[in-house]
Length: 84
Image (cartoon, rainbow, N blue to C red; front, side, top):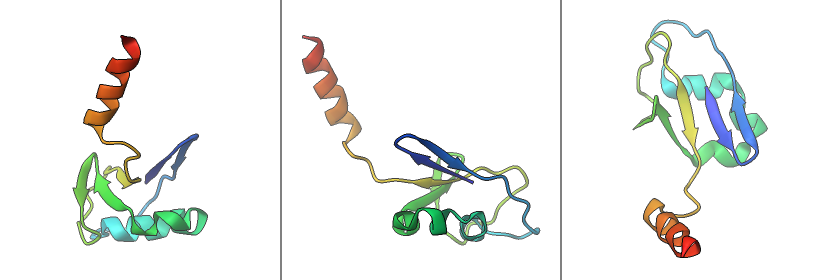
């Protein structure tokens, strides 16, 4: 279970029973207690956004996604302007 933070990451390795869901992994990780603002963020498995009821497979990496601060196109546009 991984939550990317501005200054690093909060990563936890979990062992869950067969049939566990992505939402259960987030709960079991304790990330919501450590970072309560992440309770409404989207979750995903290996870079694909999924619902909390998505079933997990052995070895899945569950991720909590923070909202983007800037749209990718706008970020590229700003970088291009700075390089000029």
